[in-house]
Image 1 (cartoon, rainbow, N blue to C red):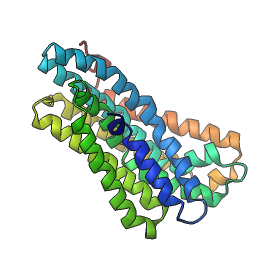
Image 2 (tube, rainbow, N blue to C red; image 1 turned 90 degrees about the vertical axis):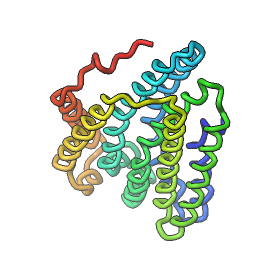
Image 3 (tube, rainbow, N blue to C red; image 1 turned 45 degrees about the vertical axis):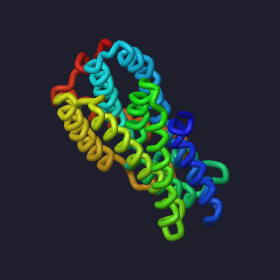
Length: 275
């Protein structure tokens, strides 16, 4: 169970070991980008997993299969609704984020560029890691640690294979791609296992939630592309200017996203679930 829950940290350790064989700075670029990548996982995914596990365990003990499935469905809807815009924002604001938070002291403009590239690669796998944190409690609630453990092994093996295939010519970016792919592999396996065992039956409404989030993220991308200045502007601005501009982009993008959800019919009351 510990191994299955720590697959992200294990993959990160593997990335660091391989990065130590690359050019100087590779470990630091991965470290800085991983800190930002793991932030929404810690805030959103870990919190959802903490809420889900005791309630899923109670529903399983009461043999309430429909409630068990509904709760997982709720977790996936919440995870997608907040995980997708987080991934989009991190991808399209990778350079601004790195420059705003870390560009000072010994960090150079080249370091900012390299760290932002690995952050973009990490962002591709963010929804997968969020889903994995939501789906794994579905197994733990049934005291099934063997299946998540097996899937975690496959995920780590995927990371190792992709890392060894890419890191020699893509450097630290190839390592980040391997981690992102491993996150999706783990999530897909967990999802498929629950579907196969009929422990989770998706509600029809989940498709509409996914589509609303997709359209909201698409409009948010347009906003970020239009109002995000060139990378040179971020490098030439002082810290307070970068902070003000970043605040505008983050809150502006969030406003566009959630306003789109509202206009497409998403309501807070639909996100409420009593178990």
